Length: 355
Ligand code: TYM
Image (cartoon, rainbow, N blue to C red; front, side, top):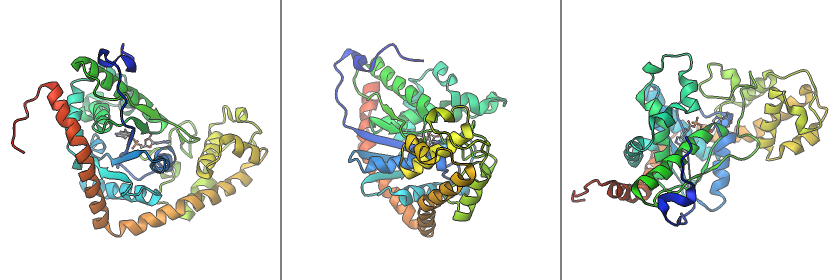
């Protein structure tokens, strides 16, 4: 899928420096999990504090690539927004909104559907996973085209950096290919070639029931994941019941090889504590899970309970959440609209309506 052009050959011109801007999004297709929190949301807050412009989005239009109950979708979008705010996103410093309120996403998504190739899309592992063993003919066209909309989410803002978990890496490679192909096809140096930010100890948090499977909001077993809305007792019970092996924790990172469940719990501990995996191993070498799990419970409850408490408080006033999302959407639209107008101009669309 990789394009022939390198980022510094776009349009055959000298590349220009793009203003640093961060964009990322989370689907409100279920509750926010510990995987979303450690792989994405916690890092969104850290990026906000690094002084780069940050734009964050609840991607409701992505969610409907598989059918969603409308009332539940609205509820989950508000709950997602509450999770962002409770985790520390400040709507004055970051732009926070839901995707469907800014039509530039859908408009640019269409243009990118005309740039991306069918072959690129059919090679996406998430598409293959989601249709594996099922009738792919019955999947929605939107599910297939999803990565073009994701590229539009990012490039509508000419974002240069995208913090995500490991599972989004291939989609970001596709976003790079779309940017390069657009620039080459139209002989411009218009879109930046984005940099994925996949960092930290928890880029891939695994299921608590099976250390070889990703923790996911769509897993049928609620025991497989921690939800940001879980209370302290639920968090404790899920960690106590988490699958492990019979060995004590090793004294080196190498010792976690072929021990997916042990590795997962150590990674979760490191990410929650803000430590490196090496530090956690050094502090807990030789510990049995009977000792390590209660430590992890205490840490998880200490870090996550304040977030769920704050989410509950925010959810009591949905009007205020909608107001924050509306303000964020106005600010997002002000950034994206001029970029989209230029895209229409570049692609040869007449824009003659009086404003
Ligand atoms: P989504 O909603 O599945 O997940 C949101 C973010 O959480 C990360 N994540 C995880 N990280 C570590 N361990 C896990 N078990 C785990 N599960 C999820 C994801 O990598 C992601 O960063 N296509 C995206 C949403 C999207 C988007 C975008 C992201 C739409 N447009 C533009 C970035 C930029 C998705 O389905 O994420």
